[in-house]
Length: 253
Image 1 (tube, one colour):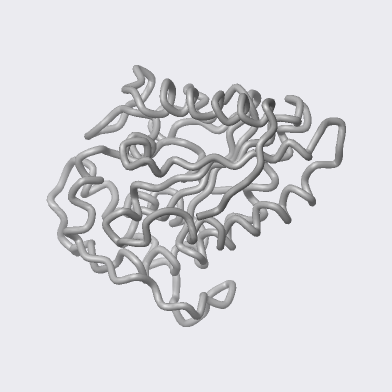
Image 2 (image 1 turned 45 degrees about the horizontal axis):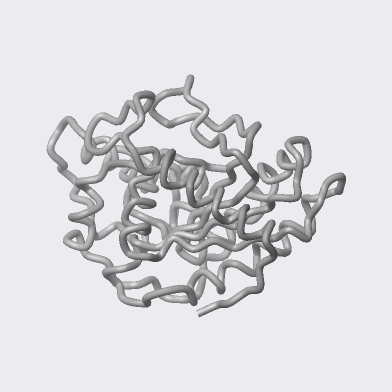
């Protein structure tokens, strides 16, 4: 378990992030337009809260005005190993854990730097089997099912981290490296003849189209050497019932 020392302002920032996650990410949202399942902005957060594994880290040392991008990148690279070390290591708890890394000292103008940070470190995270997404007051990312809904707006700047999930094919099919990392973890959960209509067919179409597109023998970046965790279709039964995660945590950079 990782421990930190928080000032009163840090505690208030962490509480703001948790209250936002509970009140915005967890309930059903009228702007969500998923074809099936929950209309919560992020069903994973509810599971993490119930499992007492929605963690918060506060970095109040970053203050505006600043050239925020490069030092923020260095901080976020370190959270790959830190996230893996958090909480339960049981396979059944992999999709019940999330981490909010909060930067309360950044003003709205500097918070936009999180967009570039997310893009620059995303491949490292995907290689490690993780997803991350930026949230801040000016974030322009929209829902994959409703392009008029700016889904990643938050009251303070933060980056959210979670384990990669099956639905992430929607956000990892556009680059070969991302797809190969996804494929080795989740290919066994897809059938070549999914039932037409609904969420399963939608996901399978993205998966098989990406597989046909990318030649595994010529990755655009070297694939990770570490073997993926064993995954079976049964592992995802509870997630399939909750629907897609719509936040920037899954959106491509």
